[in-house]
Length: 398
Image (cartoon, rainbow, N blue to C red; front, side, top):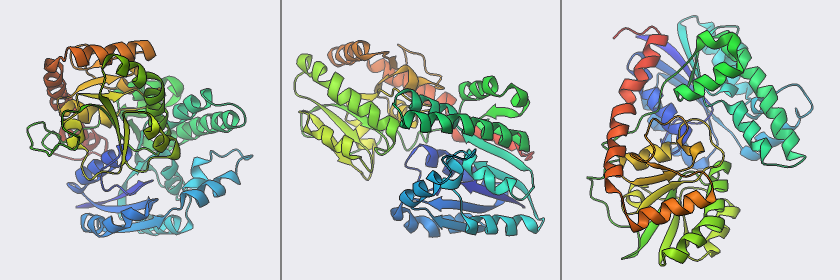
């Protein structure tokens, strides 16, 4: 079995948030064909407990502790340079040495890099990268952030967008292939970088539909006779924070005037101060970290995804669809997902439309949409099927 170097910006386990879901399933797929050498960062002290599990999956590993505050301070040193701040944020001399040692042996012929910032470790060695999985067009995400801010944040975010796009183009030129999370995301990067479009492709995320299944028996986490809207996701991720703040403060009270005794549950780890303060709004509940998100989905009436900033595919939407939930999503949250609006989920563009959709579905639930949603996920979001695309890029024989 051949050797493969796999670099990720965050430990690919447990698969409990967007990037870790994809990087973990990619790791499991790569293990079928290669002896995997994993280099990665750990930015959450709780994740050190999973090191032994990953050691059991890989031939060799290198785990680097990353303190987010120190990393931000290190990045700011380069604020007036021509370097995107994402690179020094994920810079480690220890990891650089480990990567160089692995590649200098000449026995590793394949490299898969997960996220643009990790490509710096391959470019330092002069060895070509086989596949860079950008997942999202991160430079465009920073541009979206910039559009919502005022100076000086606006300048910092737009600077990052501009410099990161140039770096993404540079990395793509150096790699054999660049992959994204959806055909639409790949199409966006082709528009931004037409000079490398022949290297750009995609593979969709997947969902474990046996795990996210409405047929399993869960204990109800809610109070008896409670009607619940639910949002799930990492609650220290700014687009999620912005989404729940907007919905809880500006939309939920209006919905409650028509549907009294309704509750809005915000379910996800590491809620920021802004999120925690939303619990002061009547009917809003912030759970923080939970052992299992599925019961919160199973016993909710509607899963909402009111994101105003988004890139790539929203796993929270796919997981809710797999659980046969009625989903009301913003156009941004639906990007890259093949579901048919009005049949498999519902799309609301703007505050008034969102309020109307939620009230309408609470008054007249369309349960057939939930069943159609699960069928769509089973058909289009199967991990084995979607990851087979990367086998062709790595020239893996069946």
